[in-house]
Image 1: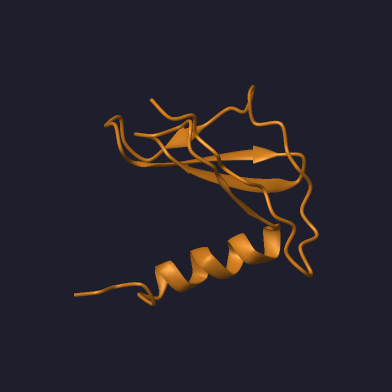
Image 2 (image 1 turned 90 degrees about the horizontal axis):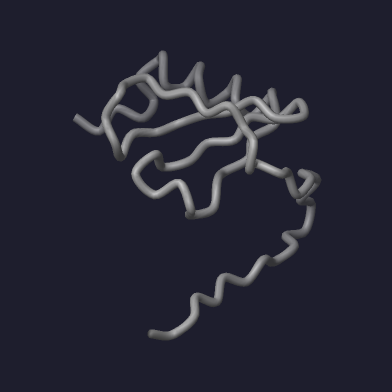
Length: 80
């Protein structure tokens, strides 16, 4: 089997640190697998797929997270 080759790239304007998420306290809205999980780490919010926790996590600043939560509450992401 071929070895996975995930390449980390620096994005212009990217000002988020490379966080150690190995001991993060992940929270979920449900007890099922495959749901979204979040953790608060070093002043940032990390989000991952609970069904595939080995995959990369998304990292948000508090301002980005606030905008996301506000948009979700207002139905901005409702696809129905």
